Length: 330
View 1 (cartoon, rainbow, N blue to C red):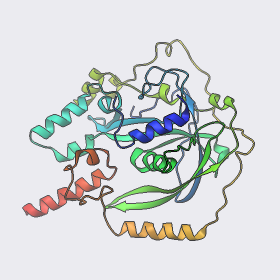
View 2 (view 1 turned 120 degrees about the vertical axis):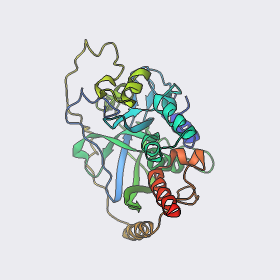
View 3 (view 1 turned 60 degrees about the vertical axis):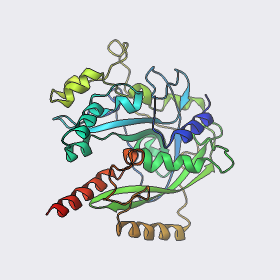
View 4 (view 1 turned 45 degrees about the horizontal axis):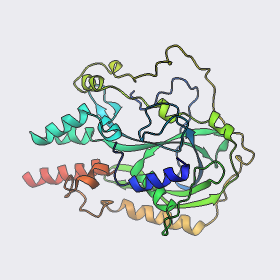
C-alpha cells in the first residue's frame, strides 16, 4: 500500500476510529528522545514515514510496508498508579477490561468522575522534522487525533477526491500550520489551523535508518495484565508483550538526526495579518466554551455517543455538566 493510499484510507476513517508504561511507547532502546512541541503561531514540519517492523500495527499493515502515523486509542488514569495503557478494544477490536468496567458503571450506579477519567481517547504519534529547529533532528510528535490528524486529513483531501501524499519521501510536502492557544473552563489546549502544503526536496531512503519504528515501540499489554492493573495490582505487571528477540538482542543506543541538505532552512515569518487574525481568534475562543460538534456544551455531555467518544474537550464538558447538575440539585 502506498503512502498516498494510506492518507486516503485514514481520511475515510478519520471520524470512525480504528476498528479492527506509564507510557504507550517503549523508548528504552533510544537515548536522548526528543519530543516536538508546536509553538503558538506559525509552524512548519516534515512528517517522515517509517517502515512497519512488527506484527502489531493497529491497521494490520505488514512488515516492510510504509506508514506515517501510529493511530491508537488509550486509557488514562488507570488503577492506583494512574497509568496510561492501550485501549485493546478500540485499537485492536479485542476485549478490554477498562472498557468492560466503563460499560458496567454506566449500567449501574454511575461514578461520573471515574468514567471521565477512564474514557478512551484517540492519540497519534509521528516522526517529524521541525523546520524551525532542524538541529534537533527527528522528533516524536504525540498529539490528539481530533485536534491534529483529523484537521490535517481534511485539508489533504481536495474537493475532487485527489489526495496530497504529504509524507511521501519523493513527492511529499512540507506542512505549514498555525497554533492558537484556546481555553475551555480552566483547561488550556492547542488548536491547529490553516494547514498548507508546500513542495519540499526529496528525502533519501536512508532516512528510514533515522526515524523511530513506531509500531515496534508500541506497548501492547495482555488482557489479564490490564485487568490486574485496573483493580489495584502493581504497574510492573503491565509490561509490553515484548518481541521474542528483544531479550536476546541489545541494540546500540544512538541519537537520531537528519542531515538532509536543506533541513536547516528557516521558515519566513511573513503574513503578519494572518498572525493577527489568529491571535484575535484565540482571544475569542477564550471568551466562550463551545462544543466542537455544535451540541450544547455542558448540557449534552454523553448524549451523542459517536461525537462524545472522540471529543477532546469531553472532560471539560463533563466538568461543566457536573457543576450545572450539582447547582440544580442545590
